Structures are given as C-alpha cells and as structure tokens.
Image (cartoon, rainbow, N blue to C red; front, side, top):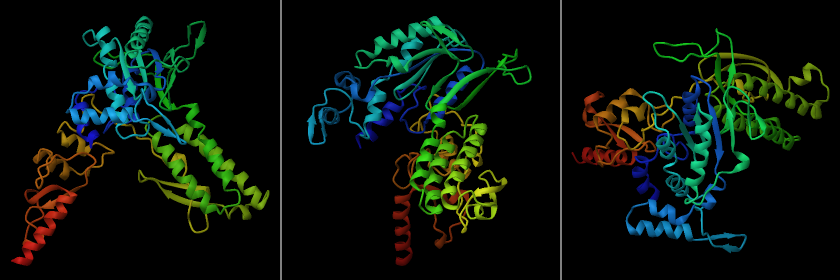
Length: 445
C-alpha cells in the first residue's frame, strides 16, 4: 500500500534513462536506449556496477529525499531499521533496504535519483549534439561519450556523488572500453564492446554494403555495424539444461521435456529482440547432441528404428504463423515435443519514450503498447481516451495491472445495442457489481 502511494509521485520525478524496477519499463528498454545512443558512431563506454547497492544505502540520506506524511515516513524508517533474523541470529540493519521487500526497489531508485542529472549538468547537450548519456538499470549503469576525458571525469564525479548515499563503484566490475576498437587503458588492452544485462553490445567494421549510416539529410556511411547479441556468460545457460538432462537420466522422456521447455522458452523470449538467430541455432545443435547422448544410456548406439522412439518428424506452426518441418524432433509418442530456440521469432523491442509513465494519463499509448496487461484492441484504446483513463462506475483511474471489462451501458438483456456509444470500460470488480445490479433491476421490473 505504501509503495502504491509513493509510486505515482516518484514516477513523475525519476529520470528518463532509469529502467530498473519501474512499471512499464524493462531491461529491453535499457538495451534499446543504448543501441539508439551508439549506432551512429564509435563511443567510449564506462561500464560500472555499484557494490552491494541494496545492502549499503544510507538510511538518513534516503529518508531526507522522501517528503510524505509523517506516519508513512515513520513506517519506512521502522522497516529500514527492523533488523534481520538469519538462522536464529539477529543482526541490526544500520544501512540498506529490506532484501526481497516489495518497497525496496522503489527506495533504491529514490536513493540513486540524480545520477543522470549530475553528468548532464557537467556536460549538457550542445544544440543537437549529445556530449554524454547515462543509462541505468537498478545498480548497473553505463556512461556513453565520444570523449574519453568526459568518461574519466564522469567516473570520478559519480564516485564522489555516491559517497553520501553510502555507496561506491565496484572496481572489479567496472571497465572503460570502446564500442568499435581495442584501446590501451591503465596498462592493459581493453577489447571492444561490453556486456550489460546479459547482452553483448559491440560494433563491427563492415564494407559499404552492410555499413550503418548517420541518418539525416546529409547521411553518410560510418563503416561499421552495431550488433547486440546474447553474452557468452548468458549462452552458458546450456549448463542449466545439461543439469536437467543429468537429473532425468532414468526419468520418462515426457518429464524431462516438461522441465526443459519453460527454461528454453523463457531464455529465448528474453533474447528475441536482438541479433540472436545464429546463437539460437548453435544452442539447438548443442542440446540435440546432449539429448542424443541421453538416449545412449537407454538404447545404446542404436539404429534409426530405435531412435524413432525419441526423435520424430513433425510440422510445427510457429507463433508468427509460419510452418517449420522438423525431421529429428525430440518428441514422445503422444506428441509432447521439446521446444527449440530457433522457433522464437526475432521481433525488435519498441523503446518507451523517456518521460512516459503509466500514471501520465496517456491511455491510448499504454493500451496499445506491446506487453501491457491491458487489452490491446483499438476499441479499448478509444474507450480509454473517451473516459480519460477513468472507470465510469467507481471514478478511479485504471492502471496497466488492472483487469478491465468492456461493458454495455444499457445491458443487452434490456435491448442495449453492441455499438460504440453504448460501450464503457469498467474495472472487473466494478463490472461484477454492475452486472449483479442490472440482474436485480431486471428481476424487480
């Protein structure tokens, strides 16, 4: 309840390039923003991580930023100071936010508010030229600039800014590199590109037929292409799959498929917005080899006839409507089959505008944005705009997490027509109340 009370105010104040633990935003927005910032040229990068962010936030500094009724502030202070009971041992919490608490992410974002404004204040935009960008996801952030000197000075300034907050940059997880070329820095060679949120972001020199362009009226070739792929560390998710296969050495084939499918689907969906096709294909080949080795313990170096107990022909209809014929698909006799990475279509993520928030009243945008909990039909978008984002029954604003029903103003049972002027949007619980009242009135009449 306190989070719900604080969130609308702070969503209007948070910086546009902060993406972690905020409604309507995701890691894919942070990655898309990085791509948008670097795809027109080569840039220096400060790739940094804040050490033990949630454990070390200074309570006094955090509470000084929050202006709310004294009763709420008292509750916040008590939660921060409540202490931790770990295996029967109690420890005071003199710093940090409650681990796993629903209030912790918004408190961490409040504590880190101002980092982008710091670097933008030091190096403001010169007309249409951006000198520096800072993109943050929770306690991970990158600083982007064409000038190495600016990157170094931003690193120093951010380190000083973090001290009153009780935080510091983690040296072993912080590096300065370039997106396109290797550089010599602090006595060692830094390879081009960097990893962020499980993605590898790097630029590759290419010829004139594949190169990117600067854009605009005087567009010119830039001689390289920006590619974002799953990082090598992320691709190691095959180890998790290997562990599942090992655990199911003597289990039925169906049990292993049911365990593996959510892992493969979830991983594929996360990386489906970047350059992942080649990675997906390689992973599928690796997993097929693992599964072939799994069958050896059951039927030895068998003939094709015996292997057909585990691998079969099948035509699969993909989510994009296309069909794919698989010849050696890992499948049970009753049709349960293993999902493959390369069945996931690559669909580019639509970047959220910097100042957009679910509380801004722009329900036409939020109703049509992919991935929201709200119905994405045009009818709902029009009704949201007509009702200015409010439920006509209770008068409260809708939020993207609400369950919404399209209701008839005059019920169909009372000859109401299924046309636009007779439709309205209600919260589902309001719809249930209205339906019960309509039925009662009909019975009474």
